[in-house]
Length: 306
Image (cartoon, rainbow, N blue to C red):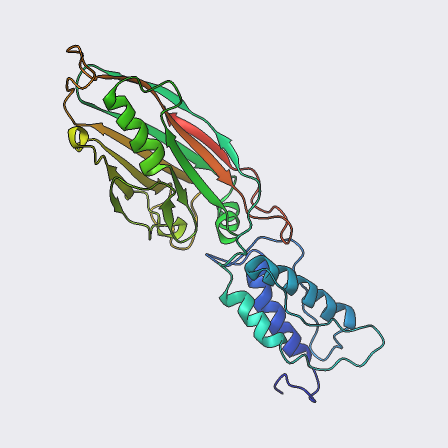
């Protein structure tokens, strides 16, 4: 019998809601699953579904919906001792919790930034590379992190005092202003910076990763003397295809190409060669923990090539 006002509410109806919802709230699979441990239990066929069980379903549902959109279902939970009638919007809200499972209410947890600096020095045009890894304790925990709205940021800069000629100043602009931070998420990525000549593939997200490098962005300088200078950020993971999850390590490779000539742009015949500190920081911003509990554990950044 269909779940509808005026009809008997069957265990089958309730169990169907539980199955759909647990796929989002619990372990799930692929891009469905927040990893919450307080999933709902089904009831035996023919058994009475108690007011407590309905109330628990609605409470969990409200937490998921608030995480996704900022507001709950608006459904009032049944009270023990009262007759329970079909809740007209319950089915729609359960379906919405699944359909909108990759949404979140624009609130994340507290970010944690780890700075990694290196000295880049050369008397001729050259290249330079930094590699950053981000490791999760398990493949499921990586899924939970991104499914619930977690974000990894790679923030580039030339720290204060590290730009003492025109070319170094332009590298400071290229890193901190043009690239800024590359933020990497479940289905996409994007820079916070502006300007420069940008080539971007913003459609690369967690579930698009493979074990081969994919270029998320490349930015070239727009300063006339330095247009051959570029920054490229590639990303890969530790499984052949992450379309359904499975990755535990993300690797971001930052390639700096100082292809422009060392010109006499600093006066007195001095070449504007580079000798500067380059920073590629990693910012881990976890999902919010007001409506969810931390199921993703500790996320560990590292510099494998500094």
